[in-house]
Length: 408
Ligand SMILES: Cc1ncc(COP(=O)(O)O)c(C=O)c1O
Image (cartoon, protein in one colour):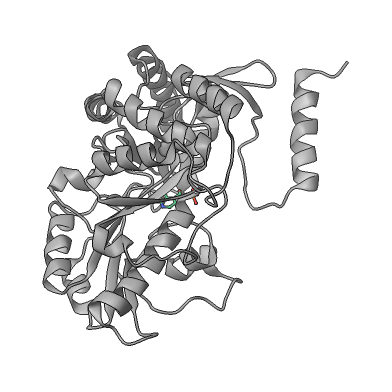
């Protein structure tokens, strides 16, 4: 009979033998989850302070989501958009109500939602704004992350994300995140849209200066440019609001949602927009076989309802504030900065090579899962309904590991 370590080793080996090496996963094999807790194949229990890059904002296997998935799967799975089904309209209405948008187009992944945004913005530029065919430009930010498709890496400024995959899509201009003058200067008569994350998660939880989005909105309005906000990571409570851009009273022309919209169980994304923008799409212009399928729609409705019923936006803001201030107290020489909003927190770690990854590995050996986001930033993003006891448990382990870092 194999030991737990041998089983774990053989599962990882199988994945590495038959899978592409496009991820460098930490060496743990998870098999079960409940709320903030997950268990590995060896029976070890962890606290998940990463939440699948915010896809598991509701915690693992939320009972209401599990029930909706099983009921819907037993009733009707996929029909494609060749036919109507009885859950889609209610899902789109619920999402529009939650975000203040007029219409929504369902896709599956976050990257597909932003791809949809780019197609909508280009077509809007030609049909509504009057840009000459083939000339539309999209302004985006340095160090953005919108996904991994060809369109998204064409928008990326990261050499690692782009290198080896050219030729890229044309028509993207980059400006520094947080710099409103640069945005103003980049806009021409051909500019269709400015696409921006309210907080840059993958760049290392980077917050823009106060009022940034508000000023961007004003610049976009004045120049007849669409403001498209990628809330795939920040939205649905992660940054303490239904949409992070709500915090600044900004009303964008379009919004992208994903990750947590699938309740931590299925991939669900949406491109939401003002009517005038969405109306550029005609039958056959765009779509996806599984986009908005009955299970996705049923789960999406329930996920949005849970955010409301469990007051997860307020909770994220409240627990995030207290977690940040406790982290500030623990802060020592090796933790240079604690930043973030709601339960989207970045810790700037210093000392030696890859200090954030080393701290993540040390925490993992002590039952806490989180992940470095670049060499020096450790990202903390527990489920939004994380129990206060689990926050305390995390803080105790974290304080011990920081003390060890300091003395090493
Ligand atoms: C802001 C943002 N946009 C888009 C994406 C891409 O989402 P997906 O991995 O579902 O394609 C991500 C994923 O991390 C993201 O953080």
